[in-house]
Image (cartoon, rainbow, N blue to C red; front, side):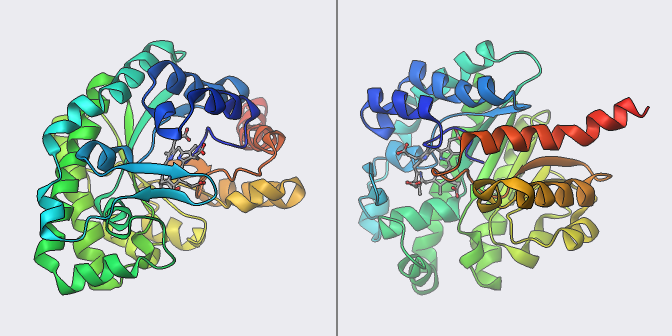
Length: 327
Ligand code: CP3
């Protein structure tokens, strides 16, 4: 989940110096700096590369900008000609600064801190490029998927290939695990979910796993509900990222044979205090005994007090420490 970002004053300072958000993503020295900031502050076990899922459409030739208070804005891709104009051949060169950032991070991070690379899943990327911005229900994208499934499949296939190339390049530059963010998986009805979320994610995971069997692939199909079960027996997927709405007892029963990651509600982190500790303890209690990575269920909110994150880290580490003390 998002580690760096506007909740940290040191991030806001670098961000102001960089100019635009994408300039920050494409300037290796600055992207390295903001990746390391939360590691210095909190000594997390793993660092997530500072970048964005929308660098992939940007590299394909869909101009992307980030507008304060509005989020990302893209030139919409809706017709066959728009898809024709996408340029997969530009990807490697355009994203070279990202791979240089990964290589510099691999050198800079202290030994036990793992470096996680990431990309957006094809469905979520398609949702942004078809709409051209975040919308309430991504209705235009869902309509295109139903009314022009062959055209939409071309877009999804192109984005899948680009995602494989982007994650392979991050792994070759030094990423030790990769995560696929399908942030809008939860808006797909059953049959569409299979076609546009499950199949592309499995294809990407299998290809990466064949090429780099030592690198864990984590998938995060946010809001997928029972749909999480569709990934439960896929061996090329090393871990499942759970969003905050997933009932944990059910997850343990249905998915507990796999490594699970999650799922603290970012609003519990925003609230802090005893309510946050209770939530943390419940998650740790329910999922210890299964392979488990403590994480948020979605990104840190910009209004979050940085001290709450410090308190969270201390709380998560506490039980393990006291277990050791008790022998
Ligand atoms: O934590 C890290 O350091 C990793 C970097 C990271 C960012 N975005 C940086 C970012 C990661 C892993 C992402 C993923 C991402 N980006 C997702 C998937 C996860 C999720 O949140 O569902 C999505 C959907 C995006 C697209 C995106 N990028 C949106 C919708 C926005 C605007 C939202 C907002 O809060 O304004 C962004 C901008 C963005 N990406 C910021 C950061 C730190 C804030 C930009 C800023 O500094 O102004």
